[in-house]
Amino acid sequence: MKNKLIHSAISAVSQKIYDKEEQIKMAFACVLANGHLLIEDKPGLGKTTLANAMSDVLGLGFGRIQFTSDMLPSDVLGVSIFQPNTADFKFFQGPIFTQILLADELNRGTPRTQSALLEAMAEKQVSVDGQTYQLKQPFFVIATQNPTDESGTFPLPDSQLDRFSISISLGYPSAKAERQLYSEEFTNQFNKPLETLIDATQLQAIQKYIEKIHASDEVKDYLQLLINQSRTHSLLVDGLSPRAGLALFRMSQSLAYIEGRDFVIPEDVKKAFLPIANHRMRSNSSQHNVTDILDKMLNETRIP
Image 1: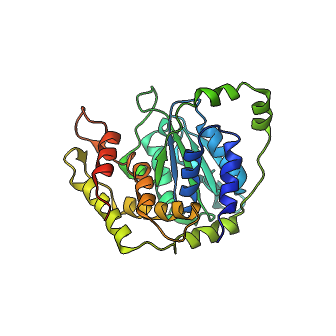
Image 2: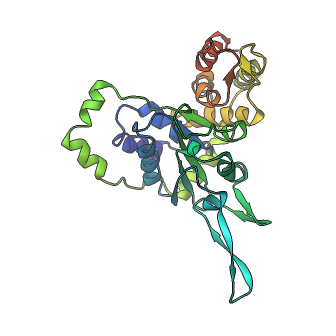
Image 3: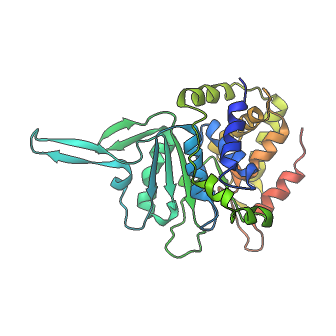
């Protein structure tokens, strides 16, 4: 299956966010891997713009929730309301009943409200008042998170973080790219809606194709070696879960597809590892940054 559609989508989104092609590529790889994406960064760096642009080119149903501290789970999932005419309860769907859900500033919601996403992200369904409702497919959560040291934020629990396949950070643009933001050309381009390039049927076909991309035993050995090292490292708290290992495998297949290959190579695993592990892991030492620990571990691990 050709990957021209994905490259066209990456190029289109790059017209809205300059100088961030690698991050955009990782975001699309996450969609193709049928995962969920966490974007961690300071305000004003393009997190919401990236989510909106991706929803435009994917042409899927789009919903947005702006999380605040006074929100309730029913504001996310929906609510059952008594109907006097029928003497029965009717369920009114919440904004989670969509295909791409932008959970904006997720960590400004309370832990109780954050937990409303857990079942939907893991099982693609929602349970309310003893009833289970299936979500439309494909279903994909893009959540943005502000730095946890900002006032009014609630750290995401491990159970929530583990459901995000990868996390990315956009960071500040280069001086050259930032200078372009002041131009009339950028303003016109930014305000112009993006065309739909991939529909739901095409996306699901690509997702199924990616699951069949070949990975040799040596590549799987390398992947498992990294997972096991995260569990035994003296400076890391706990280790990567089996869900994280599967996410690493799917992301490696997805990156291979984007690069035009029908097989995974160790470099795919290596490229996916930090985005997979960064938000899941914690350092047990205040003197060692978790990203530095993981980066060193990655560089010191021999590829079979």
